[in-house]
Length: 165
Image 1 (cartoon, rainbow, N blue to C red):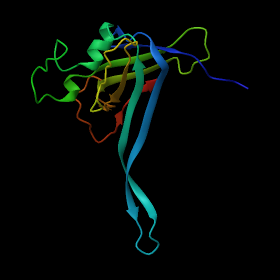
Image 2 (cartoon, rainbow, N blue to C red):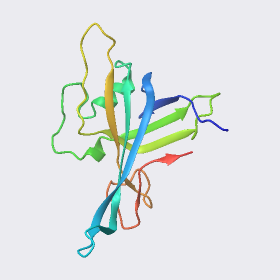
Image 3 (cartoon, rainbow, N blue to C red):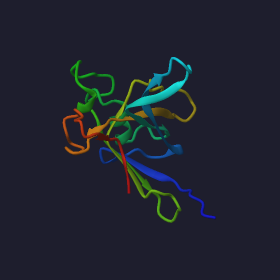
């Protein structure tokens, strides 16, 4: 048997996210419009409309520069918003998960070129306990033909959300 296990380190915009609890969870699923049959009252087919993807983790080092830029992409200082009405694609950054050496972790790297905190609330407890920050990071699609630095608008040729290497 071959077992796959191993921790990953993460950077956001090239800055370390530090130690996390229990690794990272990559969550993805297809958005499909059901085509229902009248004579059998069940799904007959479906129209594929895209994929939603996100990464979840619990951050343990809230003072790391990567953590601060991840949990607050809205302005230069925590608590300030910057201009309202901006597109989230103007606030995204690259998230790279890299397998720790000497483990059986596979793939070696997971890259999400357009990652940004999304509508899930960021909750931080201020108490005598260790400060942990659970987050959900959206993987925004990018036009596969135009590349990860494209405008954020998706053409007819499809999109990419993340890559494994």
